[in-house]
Amino acid sequence: MKVKLFDAHLHIIDPRFPLVQNQGYLPDFFSVEDYLKSTASIEVLGGVVVSGSFQGFDQSYLVDALEKLGPNFVGVAQIPPDADEEELIFLNEVGVRAVRFNLFRTGTESISRLEKMANQVWDLFKWHSELYVDPKELRSLKSLIKTLPMVSIDHLGMSTDALDSVLELVDAGAKVKATGFGRVDLDVLGAMREIHLVDQNALMAGTDLPSTRAKRKFSIDDLNLIADNFGEDAELILYKNAQIFYRLQVR
Image 1 (cartoon, rainbow, N blue to C red):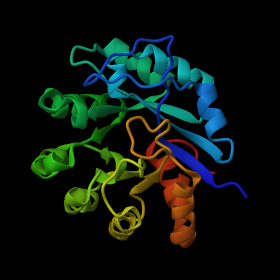
Image 2 (cartoon, helix red, strand yellow):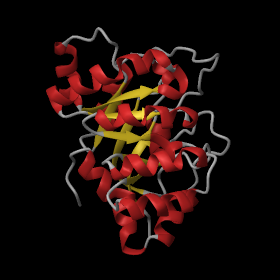
Image 3 (tube, rainbow, N blue to C red):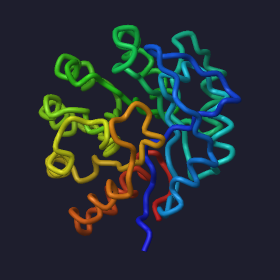
């Protein structure tokens, strides 16, 4: 039987749309068709297309990807500080449900506008904020993150050093993406168990495809790790928590 998944974190990298180097890096292309082929062994109920640092503030690829993938998929956009309300309304209409702050790749520039932007999009559309944070910086950012309306943290917080801060933020209401197992520096199963113990609605699984810059690419074993170790709660992590968080119908 195929594992059911609402894919809480995936990237589409389409050469028809603008890409920008980040720290000298440009990823290989990964189209909607590539994604569907890569997940053919999974029962994908829907998912979340997340803008990467290499896409800058381009939204055209995201609009196209969401149209192709259909209504069970939503988007996470990187928003420029001068974005006007009309642009945000359009993005909301096409399925964007969150704003991403890539603090791991862009640093202080994103931190300086985090609070204002996070509150603006929450007030307008109830978009939450998604944070890709350098684990060395998470402890110092905890107080700020706790003031934000709603947040999720990428890739289990990335390292063992960040886990205490992640658990504290989960206790304060944050969600955590159980994604990118091939890029993290921690005991994945142990971290998930600790997070789940604090809040059974916190963890949201995903493929992180195409696993850009990861030491190891996504494997179906990553999902089986969840399915085999969390009993009846596995369905919360694999699809129910994320469907609720992204405001899509729970199956």
